[in-house]
Length: 137
Image 1 (cartoon, rainbow, N blue to C red):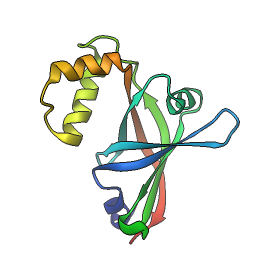
Image 2 (cartoon, rainbow, N blue to C red):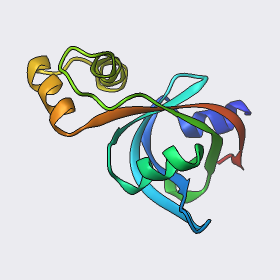
Image 3 (tube, rainbow, N blue to C red):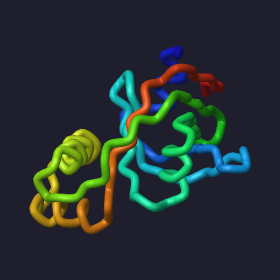
């Protein structure tokens, strides 16, 4: 990926996660993502269409629009999903805490965050980028 396209992706932002429906058509979801230079991470909820699609077919794309729509980047790869958070001290919750810290800094109440991750049945999507394309601004 060129540095211009990498600049469009940035470290964190809003994008469109594209998964594949059972009938082969794309399913698009707005998501907040975190990019660390190698992988994209997204917090997902169990039971949603994108999560079900990724369990069936791990191929995914993330589309990020540049400023004023004059540039964009699409990154593609295969999703890895953690287990669903089931306890406030499980490994998935710890990974979601790392994700939150990397994306937004410190949370005002980590105990509340831990409870929410379990109650919402959260999991973490991680995708190593295999291919990218786009248009630099």
